[in-house]
Image (cartoon, rainbow, N blue to C red; front, side, top):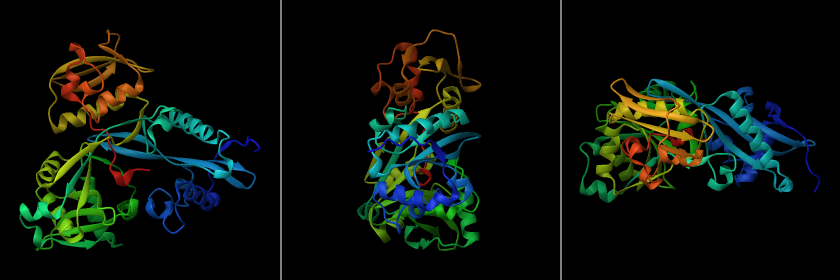
Length: 386
């Protein structure tokens, strides 16, 4: 097979349909249920969104492609710009020519040059560790069954009405306002709320009480027994909304990313049959002080972190001083002697989970504070994945 030497180029809007065909074929999706349907908020033929993708051409056909989608991740009062990588695909007729390596090399260089502090990517762990991504972060699933509701029914759940979310701008604006109240969330562009609520083949349901008050919404996939997003106006409403959804649609696993309102997750834990915690995806940090400090502040706002100081040396980042004082958390470069020297992958798992720090490395005494601080809340809501 002839080696393809064409450069990696930015996708043009006129090539969008061919690109969608390429990635649908690579992932085994049909045109009627592919990327423009289950990730409609990301894959549109607009110059802005189409231009997030990069391709290698072979003559008049597309041989390989992938995308980098900028995500503004609101972490309390701070915003971290995340490079969301997705749609990595190679035409089967052009595999084993190094095209994936060329695409990923290009994307990684672009991410670095654009100054993203961190990046998220879905996919197989070892495949993407070659380029520096590592599975980390925390994501919890609260599994609720009808028996849980029958034996311990949340107050008022039977009177709740669940209605499919349609195209009504006023309703979408109300749900968008509830979503934006969350302390940690990805920014969703104005006018895209409907699309995001339907990502991953979800069916969003708006919840109202007997008086017509909007309680929130839950996005579910009945076939997969999955609820990818739950947002409520008040933590006390969470068990009742979930209970109503379960009694109408069957067992559900409700996804809650790290950093979700602890009052909500405590109530879900009381209702659920079981809770499972896993990593939140593949992550790569490029600006360690900025990311660590932002997530330390987010954790501190939920539950004040104990005072202390740890110096870590991280590959390609140098020595960093992590500290919690009366003025709050901080992370900054230092010349002090480190308690530990870590490669980037180990540091990612150590700081962000899903395991406790002592389950990742043996902690020396002068790094013991990490056991109280970590894992830090690194996670995107599932409807914001790429």
